[in-house]
Image 1 (cartoon, rainbow, N blue to C red):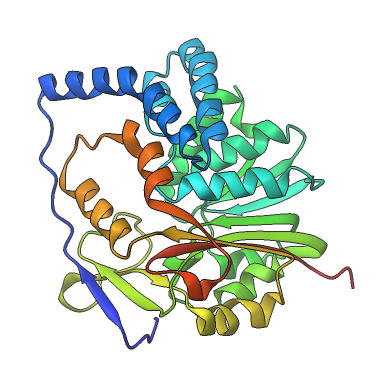
Image 2 (image 1 turned 90 degrees about the vertical axis):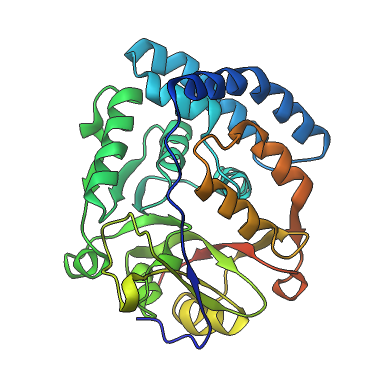
Length: 317
């Protein structure tokens, strides 16, 4: 378990369920305002908008065909959330020039897997997620968009088990996941999954000073609650953490990019709102991201919470 001296305890509220009228109204607003807010975000130079519109196209093309209307709703109205706009954008940019043949993904957002396999149709993918319930949803997504999810492999094993089994690939990805693993040696194990000459792509929450978050409502079904019913949620990586937990195992990345809030506290306030209400206006999210966040040239420039994306290449020998 993490031994960070700074801990933040989060009391996540229980959002009240929506009435049928509220659900209909929320759905109607979403379909009306999604495109205008994407346009507003485009005018402000927002991140991830090409991927956002690509998901709308996929939703219309495939979800109607399969009659999976829940997937249609997810793809059109809320496929990306906050930091995902940056993460999907940077992944789309960095990975397009790589020759991706075999891949292991460690619990990234399932729509990242959809994007990865759609742009690399010949890739051999092993999707790993120890949360069995969430893994089933990923299988459902592949059944919807591929027609036969058996084309890809799925596993609920932990990193230790994957390493012990000798599992490896030429490309390993983990988007906003490793911060939820309290084991400080987790990157050593992750790096062992990468074949010589292969690549590792990761994104992590970061800040000028690191800390741990604990939460009273934990939904992943992987870790157990500690004292007073709080469960380790995630760690924010500062420069020392990146060196001690990541770079000492993986070496220096071939590409690095920092992104974060312009005003300290913006992300946390937005997260609190999302946890408090069931009808959060996700159609506004692209505009919020374009307005309130930006890229930074270094970790030291971050005023508050941010995300670091890193691409590592493993030596051939």
